[in-house]
Amino acid sequence: MLLLNPGPVTLTERVRQSLLQTDLCHREPEFFDLQDEARKRLVAAYALDPATWSAVLMTGSGTAAVESMIAGLVPEGGRLLVVENGVYGDRIAQIAKQYGIDHEVIKYEWMQAPDIDAIIERLDGGTFTNVAIIHHETTTGRLNAIDRLSRACAERGIGLLLDAVSSFGAEAIDFDGGGIAAIAATANKCLHGVPGAAFVIARRDALAKAANRTYYLGIARLAKLQDERNTPFTPSVHAYYALVEALREFEEEGGWRARHQRYAKLAEQMRSGLASLGMASALPPEESSVVLRAYRLPAGMTYEKLHDALKAKGFVIYAGQGGLSKELFRISTMGALDANDMDRLISAFVELVR
Image (cartoon, rainbow, N blue to C red):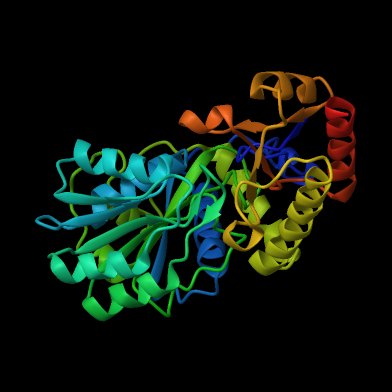
């Protein structure tokens, strides 16, 4: 069964076999060697300076990392501007509300790109310490343009908190040229690991000012103890094995730029094949991530019928979210997939719609 959903991904055999390594106590030096390697490789994935940036590991899904970032890196007494143009922007707003963080939401339709000029104007009209935005809004496959917003945040001394859960490892992220204070991401998307290991990569000066709103996901404590080769709780050890093996494979294959190129070719192959069958992309390629694209459902076919027919042929696709479930389906090109897989998937579509 090939997974074309936006995580978890189809694993390489190498990463799958890494799960069979020896059982390991998380209080032994061998585990801390593993943790250190994961943290070092995460910082190196975008050639970051480890004196400036710290990778903070945690056990949980990508949402755990986002929650840890928002709850910890909006300082006490801080104020957050949340940019929302999909499900995951709304999720950040819910997290802020749950923790009682003073925040404001600037909301756009799910198919709409954020208006960066309007966001910057709002920053100048308020007293915000942080902005949170989704990089790749998986709801629609849109890659939100963040570079100008990031520079504007840097100019105003505002920390940008970036949900990079489904972009880290495959899309460009300008860490040093703007106002990014932290990003949140996970092992089981563009890095091709397994669910259970998530992380925040944060500026060390932002970690030094972190708030203490949450217990298990408290980012300041996690960062401090991991720097000391320690851990406050029992991590998902085997997920860490897989993350390290996936990061080794990631580096050997050429890093995020090579992964971007690979995904882009597969995404274009898929877009072209579906277009020939009359299934249009929901967004133009230049506005989309290479990681995932959304497509219009064929006339007269429900998502459920399409999903079940493709699953019977060995392919798992993904529904649109919310009200878009009746209009769209989504296909991700993450994981151990190649051009032959896309050809077989397009052939399966041909059988269904012609």
